[in-house]
Length: 222
Image (cartoon, rainbow, N blue to C red):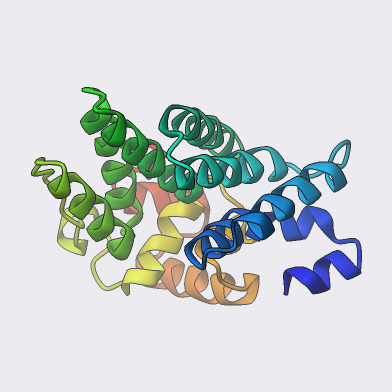
Protein backbone atom coordinates (compact mmCIF):
# COMPACT_ATOMS: atom_id res chain seq x y z
CA UNK A 1 0.00 0.00 0.00
CA UNK A 2 2.75 2.48 0.96
CA UNK A 3 4.70 1.59 -2.18
CA UNK A 4 1.61 2.36 -4.24
CA UNK A 5 1.24 5.78 -2.63
CA UNK A 6 4.91 6.52 -3.30
CA UNK A 7 4.61 5.44 -6.93
CA UNK A 8 1.79 7.96 -7.37
CA UNK A 9 3.62 10.69 -5.42
CA UNK A 10 1.00 10.59 -2.67
CA UNK A 11 3.56 11.31 0.03
CA UNK A 12 1.19 13.32 2.28
CA UNK A 13 -1.10 10.26 2.32
CA UNK A 14 1.61 7.66 2.77
CA UNK A 15 3.20 9.47 5.70
CA UNK A 16 0.16 8.49 7.76
CA UNK A 17 1.41 4.89 7.85
CA UNK A 18 5.13 5.56 8.27
CA UNK A 19 5.27 5.23 12.07
CA UNK A 20 3.40 1.91 12.08
CA UNK A 21 5.46 0.57 9.18
CA UNK A 22 8.69 1.68 10.85
CA UNK A 23 7.72 -0.19 14.01
CA UNK A 24 6.85 -3.29 11.97
CA UNK A 25 10.16 -3.23 10.07
CA UNK A 26 12.11 -2.86 13.31
CA UNK A 27 10.23 -5.79 14.86
CA UNK A 28 11.25 -7.85 11.82
CA UNK A 29 14.90 -6.91 12.26
CA UNK A 30 14.95 -4.69 9.16
CA UNK A 31 16.54 -1.70 10.87
CA UNK A 32 18.20 -0.23 7.79
CA UNK A 33 14.97 -0.36 5.78
CA UNK A 34 13.14 1.35 8.62
CA UNK A 35 15.68 4.17 8.79
CA UNK A 36 15.64 4.58 5.01
CA UNK A 37 11.84 4.76 5.01
CA UNK A 38 11.81 7.56 7.57
CA UNK A 39 14.54 9.47 5.78
CA UNK A 40 12.75 9.13 2.43
CA UNK A 41 9.53 10.59 3.81
CA UNK A 42 11.38 13.38 5.61
CA UNK A 43 12.86 14.45 2.28
CA UNK A 44 9.76 14.02 0.11
CA UNK A 45 7.27 15.72 2.46
CA UNK A 46 9.52 18.71 3.18
CA UNK A 47 7.69 21.87 2.14
CA UNK A 48 4.48 19.98 1.31
CA UNK A 49 1.05 20.68 2.74
CA UNK A 50 1.11 17.53 4.88
CA UNK A 51 -0.14 18.26 8.43
CA UNK A 52 0.42 14.67 9.54
CA UNK A 53 4.07 14.65 8.48
CA UNK A 54 5.42 16.39 11.59
CA UNK A 55 3.83 14.11 14.22
CA UNK A 56 4.05 10.93 12.12
CA UNK A 57 7.75 11.36 11.39
CA UNK A 58 8.51 12.34 14.98
CA UNK A 59 6.78 9.16 16.11
CA UNK A 60 8.71 7.11 13.56
CA UNK A 61 12.01 8.61 14.75
CA UNK A 62 10.94 7.70 18.27
CA UNK A 63 10.60 4.08 17.23
CA UNK A 64 14.06 4.14 15.63
CA UNK A 65 15.68 5.54 18.78
CA UNK A 66 13.73 3.25 21.12
CA UNK A 67 14.83 0.24 19.07
CA UNK A 68 18.43 1.36 19.55
CA UNK A 69 17.96 1.84 23.29
CA UNK A 70 18.30 5.62 23.01
CA UNK A 71 15.48 6.14 25.47
CA UNK A 72 15.91 9.84 26.19
CA UNK A 73 15.90 10.79 22.51
CA UNK A 74 13.04 8.41 21.79
CA UNK A 75 10.97 9.87 24.61
CA UNK A 76 11.55 13.39 23.29
CA UNK A 77 10.41 12.35 19.81
CA UNK A 78 7.26 10.70 21.16
CA UNK A 79 6.49 13.79 23.26
CA UNK A 80 6.88 15.95 20.15
CA UNK A 81 4.58 13.61 18.21
CA UNK A 82 1.95 13.64 20.97
CA UNK A 83 1.87 17.44 21.12
CA UNK A 84 1.63 17.77 17.33
CA UNK A 85 -1.10 15.12 17.06
CA UNK A 86 -3.07 16.89 19.80
CA UNK A 87 -2.96 20.15 17.87
CA UNK A 88 -4.49 18.66 14.71
CA UNK A 89 -6.48 17.30 16.67
CA UNK A 90 -5.82 13.57 16.42
CA UNK A 91 -6.57 12.48 19.97
CA UNK A 92 -6.19 8.74 19.44
CA UNK A 93 -2.77 9.10 17.79
CA UNK A 94 -1.76 11.54 20.52
CA UNK A 95 -2.68 9.01 23.21
CA UNK A 96 -0.57 6.33 21.54
CA UNK A 97 2.43 8.67 21.35
CA UNK A 98 1.99 9.55 25.04
CA UNK A 99 1.95 5.84 25.92
CA UNK A 100 5.13 5.33 23.91
CA UNK A 101 6.73 8.28 25.68
CA UNK A 102 5.81 6.71 29.02
CA UNK A 103 7.49 3.43 28.01
CA UNK A 104 10.73 5.33 27.34
CA UNK A 105 10.49 7.14 30.68
CA UNK A 106 9.98 3.83 32.47
CA UNK A 107 13.11 2.48 30.76
CA UNK A 108 15.02 5.53 32.00
CA UNK A 109 13.73 5.09 35.54
CA UNK A 110 12.07 8.51 35.36
CA UNK A 111 9.72 9.01 38.33
CA UNK A 112 7.29 10.92 36.11
CA UNK A 113 6.63 7.92 33.88
CA UNK A 114 3.52 6.85 35.79
CA UNK A 115 1.88 10.26 35.44
CA UNK A 116 2.55 10.29 31.69
CA UNK A 117 1.11 6.79 31.31
CA UNK A 118 -1.97 7.88 33.26
CA UNK A 119 -2.62 10.55 30.62
CA UNK A 120 -2.67 7.89 27.92
CA UNK A 121 -4.91 5.62 29.99
CA UNK A 122 -7.38 8.43 30.61
CA UNK A 123 -7.49 9.25 26.88
CA UNK A 124 -8.05 5.60 25.93
CA UNK A 125 -10.81 5.38 28.53
CA UNK A 126 -12.61 8.41 27.11
CA UNK A 127 -12.28 7.00 23.58
CA UNK A 128 -13.37 3.48 24.65
CA UNK A 129 -10.21 2.14 23.00
CA UNK A 130 -10.30 -1.16 24.85
CA UNK A 131 -7.30 -2.90 23.26
CA UNK A 132 -5.11 0.14 23.73
CA UNK A 133 -6.31 0.54 27.29
CA UNK A 134 -5.45 -3.08 28.09
CA UNK A 135 -1.98 -2.68 26.58
CA UNK A 136 -1.31 0.55 28.51
CA UNK A 137 -2.45 -0.89 31.84
CA UNK A 138 -0.25 -3.96 31.24
CA UNK A 139 2.69 -1.63 30.62
CA UNK A 140 2.07 0.00 33.98
CA UNK A 141 1.85 -3.35 35.74
CA UNK A 142 5.17 -4.48 34.25
CA UNK A 143 6.75 -1.52 36.01
CA UNK A 144 5.01 -2.15 39.33
CA UNK A 145 2.05 0.19 38.90
CA UNK A 146 -1.60 -0.71 39.28
CA UNK A 147 -3.33 1.90 37.13
CA UNK A 148 -7.09 2.06 37.62
CA UNK A 149 -8.93 2.12 34.31
CA UNK A 150 -12.48 1.40 33.33
CA UNK A 151 -14.31 1.76 30.05
CA UNK A 152 -17.44 3.73 30.70
CA UNK A 153 -20.75 2.15 29.81
CA UNK A 154 -23.88 3.73 28.49
CA UNK A 155 -25.18 3.85 32.04
CA UNK A 156 -22.41 6.35 32.83
CA UNK A 157 -22.74 8.96 30.12
CA UNK A 158 -25.96 8.78 28.17
CA UNK A 159 -24.63 6.40 25.50
CA UNK A 160 -27.00 3.61 26.50
CA UNK A 161 -28.29 1.76 23.45
CA UNK A 162 -25.25 2.53 21.30
CA UNK A 163 -22.76 -0.06 20.18
CA UNK A 164 -19.17 0.48 21.34
CA UNK A 165 -18.16 1.67 17.86
CA UNK A 166 -21.15 4.01 17.58
CA UNK A 167 -20.35 5.52 20.97
CA UNK A 168 -16.70 6.02 20.04
CA UNK A 169 -17.59 7.72 16.74
CA UNK A 170 -20.20 9.88 18.50
CA UNK A 171 -17.73 11.07 21.14
CA UNK A 172 -15.15 12.02 18.53
CA UNK A 173 -17.82 13.80 16.46
CA UNK A 174 -18.92 15.70 19.57
CA UNK A 175 -15.42 17.21 19.83
CA UNK A 176 -15.96 18.79 16.40
CA UNK A 177 -13.91 16.35 14.31
CA UNK A 178 -15.08 15.81 10.73
CA UNK A 179 -15.99 12.37 9.43
CA UNK A 180 -12.72 12.31 7.48
CA UNK A 181 -10.71 13.06 10.63
CA UNK A 182 -12.59 10.41 12.62
CA UNK A 183 -11.99 7.90 9.83
CA UNK A 184 -8.23 8.52 9.97
CA UNK A 185 -8.11 8.14 13.74
CA UNK A 186 -10.18 4.95 13.83
CA UNK A 187 -8.77 3.40 10.62
CA UNK A 188 -12.24 3.27 9.09
CA UNK A 189 -13.64 4.51 5.81
CA UNK A 190 -15.53 7.85 5.88
CA UNK A 191 -18.61 5.94 4.68
CA UNK A 192 -18.44 3.61 7.71
CA UNK A 193 -18.00 6.58 10.04
CA UNK A 194 -21.03 8.27 8.48
CA UNK A 195 -23.06 5.10 9.02
CA UNK A 196 -22.11 4.79 12.70
CA UNK A 197 -22.60 8.51 13.32
CA UNK A 198 -26.02 8.51 11.68
CA UNK A 199 -27.10 5.52 13.78
CA UNK A 200 -25.85 7.17 16.98
CA UNK A 201 -27.64 10.42 16.24
CA UNK A 202 -30.90 8.61 15.50
CA UNK A 203 -30.71 6.56 18.68
CA UNK A 204 -29.91 9.59 20.82
CA UNK A 205 -32.27 11.95 19.05
CA UNK A 206 -29.43 14.37 18.33
CA UNK A 207 -29.57 16.71 15.34
CA UNK A 208 -26.01 18.07 15.51
CA UNK A 209 -22.58 17.37 16.91
CA UNK A 210 -23.25 19.90 19.66
CA UNK A 211 -26.37 18.01 20.71
CA UNK A 212 -24.37 14.79 20.70
CA UNK A 213 -22.08 16.28 23.35
CA UNK A 214 -25.06 17.13 25.54
CA UNK A 215 -26.60 13.67 25.14
CA UNK A 216 -23.29 12.02 26.00
CA UNK A 217 -22.84 14.12 29.10
CA UNK A 218 -19.67 15.82 27.84
CA UNK A 219 -17.12 15.34 25.11
CA UNK A 220 -13.86 13.35 25.20
CA UNK A 221 -11.99 16.54 25.80
CA UNK A 222 -14.09 17.62 28.77
